[in-house]
Picture 1 (cartoon, helix red, strand yellow):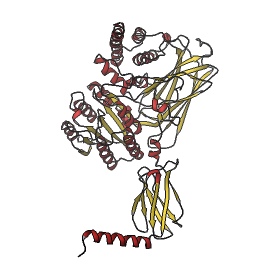
Picture 2 (cartoon, rainbow, N blue to C red):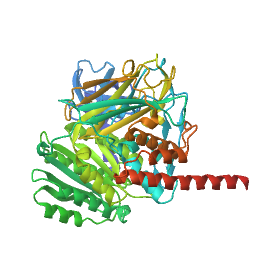
Picture 3 (cartoon, one colour):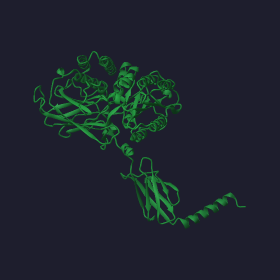
Length: 594
């Protein structure tokens, strides 16, 4: 009897002889994407045998086949699968795989605005403690003759303001990259003016003086979206995706979210549907799709949420989207509401992987709203990425009042979109304006340095008021009554699409010279200016030349609506901020002297 070793040797020998007789051809080639980048680990199926192979380094492959003609299939996640019929297997093959739309989107960096000049990149601090924020670059002045047109993304995000409030109420300096002035302005929904007729937006502008630079002016552009008729709002399919990992076991995290969700549930209609998915020690469906009429069952499921375990965020997101897909309401409001401290420490932890997941899922019309909570390990950068890639919005809940504001008082703004992919282009008249600087809407440094970056449109909810502020350098000083309402200093174009539709629409507006000194403007413009000053002071803007905390406080005090508790709170935050920052500055000065 032959030994096992001899049997194996004989078998290998026969296999070599067999392959020599049968494999008369050697099929070689390489695989690239449509940008000529080599693709590794592409699955290759040979149809004549059904055998599976993979491309190697540089996208190359080599396969022994038995006939001159054959056919192959090529597939790779994120790319369109293709099949090739090959008439001569001895010829070198060049295979091209085309990226799927969501994969192509991931290759791009997306801008919040086109207003950053590479000549003046002011970078702020990126993080504090275990909290992470995207490294931002403050917009610099742009010469109108070089770049008369600029663009910016419009959305309803307001998370930055409530996060800033948390730090100041803890008597702490605010991380500079946590300051996003456009979200601070969004928080107040200034002087809402409904659009007329069938218009989606109303647009207004105001030209005024600049309190921190007497040689410059401020241009305010306000955009208000139409309000949906509450009686005609389409039914909602909401999936609450709740982080119940161990890091959420704190009073300002899971208990705060449970309180916010309870308030939302109280306002559900019988036609609405709610599901609950949790991820933590376990990941799964806590509540299957349940009608809004069965509030007791939904509220009990919320009450039963408990924290513990790891944070498999990626698995939870997949489960939530599966549930949203299976309970999808055609022409309805289909949305996943992710509530987390952003600490994804198990699964696809990289922002790129999470982006890919969200970008792929939103193609079917399921949007994403993100609610951030917590302190110490709050991952603002991850939540921001998820919301933007999910064609949705995000907010930060620092207390129960904020939860009620976001999910009850501003429910339609938060959850019901009237326009998607919303961006605004502004074309300045170089005869009147020599330079301009967009305040807020700052971009990430990685985005600025990528010359292929494009503008990413945002989502606008029902009845929202967005305000953009430009600091401009006039060719000649503007004066009251000088060509007022006659010459056009800028043209605004709002680009958008209806929710769930791909057709891009546009609404135009002319900014006329209607100059008024700041102290003679309506209160909401002066209040918005004080918000801009507050943000500039928090992130140590080099552009606030002749204004400080006292000037910002005085402007706010003279412009607030005393009947509005949010205005009163803002003034209180300004006063607290002054004490914190002046004290910190004195401390640093003493340390230097020592």
